Image (cartoon, rainbow, N blue to C red; front, side):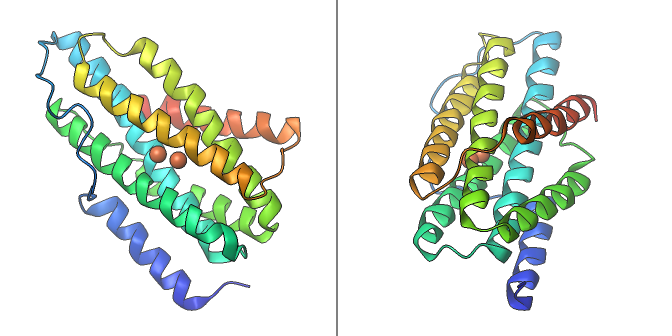
Length: 208
Ligand SMILES: [Fe+2]
Ligand SMILES: [Fe+2]
């Protein structure tokens, strides 16, 4: 059952995610590194990849908010809240890096937020085992995606790489924590469908 107070909190969090700068408690990874000179093409590539990752973090916010509406696991709640807090930091780091590179955030973020929020709420309704399994699989797929971005990101982009490496570590930890709290292994076709839908996001956010 959806709790109206939680729903209003979710909407408020969504508006803040989309329209106000995110806050970070931890220092931004790579902050102390000096900016390597990037040529125009490298800068555009780095900004576009960071835009995709920022949109991924917008989706993560929405997913955690959505599942918090319906999830029932009090034991897992603390771990999920901790992960959600780290997602907010990822949002702040990617947002900041886009600005440093002179890039822009995806105009499609509200759409992706709404879709991910619905997915999160739906998976929460299926019960803790599947909800946590869905989160774990999402995080695993994000890890794979980030490994790909680390290969594509210019080696000169030290700051961007430091951010992605820390995010990758955090996401891997979110995945193992969700499994530790009872997440089930999802059926193969569900995993494939998740991959296909995140591909739509990553490919459109690269351009828009
Ligand atoms: Fe994240
Ligand atoms: Fe995560």
